[in-house]
Image 1 (cartoon, rainbow, N blue to C red):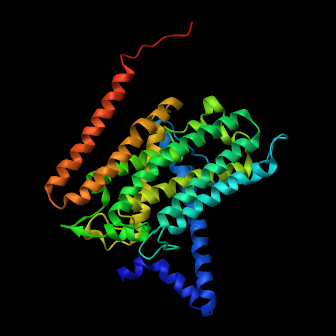
Image 2: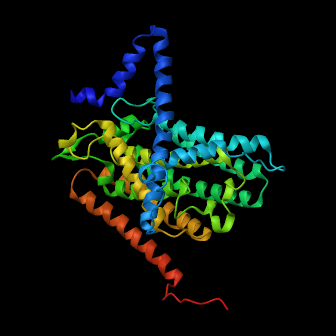
Image 3: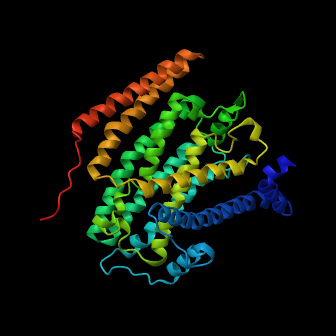
Length: 391
């Protein structure tokens, strides 16, 4: 019974395609999986917008949306109707084709990443040997769409926002890749399914998730920082800085096209969170051996939900960085730590089992963090904050 509940979606798909001729079963199965992914994540996007507006409202000591439906829960429907019926304005000087294609390419590339992501036991659209490589190739394409939006709008604020976004995304993409390489080094595979299987073991009831190792914890923290910057979320939301660039690369977008950008940003957050769970948090595996009876897809989406709550908390808590602070942080701290973590992961592999590798690997990472952190703090010469009034 528990196994059937775990595999309920897989069994349902097989039941549907079982009525079809054998030659149609594979393509129809793929279409059903694609439709489920395309339907599921926009629904989660709608729920997350309510959660975010309520959560940020709570942090800012206000109610948030409370007019549409009970407790404002139907607000996403009102927002969707508004986006669909709003006038689509394209500037006269804009490149209409590029202006139109930019949000479409963004959404398509973001959704492509889910094709190789295991969302539960036996719940992956394509079990590709180079799944991780495919995922990052699709993610890199989103930078093209952002630049297309800024360039095609023929607006200086849009272009500046796009240039900021591309510089930021390329800088942190290097860190994102390097933080994931340690997982490939340890598992010897680029398949996300095999990476989850490598973590699906338990000792004394506790899982063998990679985050519970010194190199895994460091890699996860670097991945989380780079992932937040990749999705242009606070405190790395400079490309959309309202006070400086109006709204950045989507200044000249309205109506449905703006909604596509909004959808692309949130789906990218789901995607980055899902990959982080897969690489470091065991994917669909349970946090304790005693809880393996819970369906695997509940664990995957539960981890996704926790990640989204952290994104919302960060948005309501941290101030936006300056552009120079953002780039310095990427190239002078995050990237060196990622490179050092590669060395530490290799050391962990060849030191063998025992307490010694825990001490040596943890010591190297803590020492590097302390040295680089204190060096940066000394350069800043932080002192008491002085408040001055405009004259």
